[in-house]
Length: 532
Image (cartoon, rainbow, N blue to C red; front, top):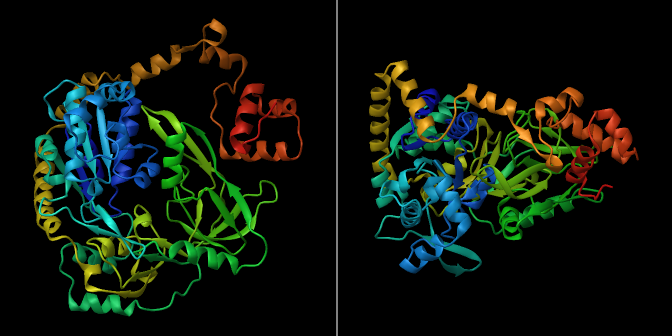
């Protein structure tokens, strides 16, 4: 199924499982759908199964969103307690569309608990209380795990057997009965032979010739700007610190800024791939930890720090493609109905001599050294291999047989998912454009949304009330052309330059044509200083 076909199905309000191989465009499709909902005045609940995944999408974990916290199963007492949480109740009742990303890492028990909470709070017997539910992910990725203790510093992980841990085995999944949209386009891997090899791993059909191809990639990197992926976390931090210390000079330090609810800030810090204290030197191997809205870089773009800007002091990174990018601070936030609850700001980089396979999920790497000789989990080898764009960018330090295995239960159900997707595409393909548009319109109306023309009219007449006096933004812009105008990266850079050169706020107001409050609030966000 193509991304466009999946998007047309999502717009009907049907429950959907959006899946596909890494790089097939799942995130892009969801971003398109959320933009479509926003354009119609509908705010979806964007959640993920893990904290790291949630930071990538500026959303919440499904555990926080639903109020279940760390519990995977709920008692009657737990359900009653959650039903007394005003914020949770208000949030769930206001939601029309629920998106759960990285569904592969959510256990069946947890999904059942979330679904039960939605039914009770929304006072509806329908699955998830009548929400449109969109599961996003790939069950060939890392699966749900159960913590069973520690040994020798390594966490031991095992499946909750004999009950299947996978979300697709839950009662909630069966009741929801999502249509499967299995994307087949490929936007990450640029090498046909490598893509064929990955597909073979996915189907548990790796041939001797393919194994020989992998063995030939046991070579040293031709470029020094390459990161190493490890199955375990034990050595990653020490490797990065050790390699940084080998570079000359004192490190430049960049401190994370934060605002909002302290518990949420701590959760953001734990799951952000950029550290709270980022130390860099010229020559440091780094990778970007966020997708740039302007397309300058993506999560996983690799490079080397070549200088620090004399004007802003921020690092300038030369990527493996030869592009020079000044890495200015970016925001990560937890949002509820598009309202920020907590936010952290940091330069979107991390040291990249080494990184764990787990933290590489969602990344697209130009090249990587991969050590799978101690791979211990189904899907771990597949996740690591599929981070890389081409076979030429793959440098293996070794692999064991487990590294090429996928979970047999997932292997079986994947064929059913593909068949379901083909049948769904065929059924919707028989619908006329008029029929589809009617379904789209009906869902928007049922969700309390508006047409684009109604949204435009509402925006034009919207008023704000400072000091009790009503006026429209359009009327305000007749006198102040830049009122409520978004700040660009170029604006931020120029504003920082003027601030660091000692310019007065009045001079900045004149340069940008903005009010004092707009200047001071922006400077406080960029610098963390209190501006008077």
